[in-house]
Image (cartoon, rainbow, N blue to C red; front, side):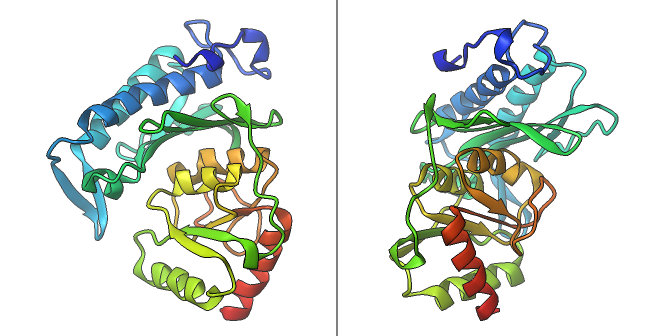
Length: 277
């Protein structure tokens, strides 16, 4: 377990401690670390991969990592529900629900591109309480507690201070729905060259995390699932960002799109994207 997550039960913000006496965020960090070890171990191997849907790759490693996360979360909080990308376990009657993506960026992973992560979020009645995004290759962990700020490896982070899109690097991803992917590409083309550069990230969770720490100035996506964005929307919000759905409305774990940036960039991007629609 990472030392900076070895916190005392007094820091749980009223969340129950685990059966092992651990803080909930420390449990999320250890679960993600275990998945990350599996991803690191298998990243250079010949992978068995197939398409779940057109363009949506899954590998055997996705399932191995997910099994490691679920096993540990069940050990520490057996009474809480789990929703994971590959097994889609749910427990609708539980107050607390873990939302897990064991490998966000499966296409990158399958191609040997070292840009992928594990995402773990804790939700209570639809509200994200904890969010954690772990990059096992760079050994970077983005984390947030509701009302407690956001960190990268234990150090506070904040969204970009840039004031205009003309100064900015914009990140986005296309997802697995062709019409929405085309819409994202048309939007990026319509905005160019009135910004510094564009990045297609290949991992929505890392894209949102990079917006949260200012590595990119804005991130958007048109087609997401709860496990793609649950952790990231809290990390970005706690980093001082404005985080909405793709149309500028309130964001939730059930939103299908996201915009994450600072207030001025978010407003300018939303206005320009509406004008280009």
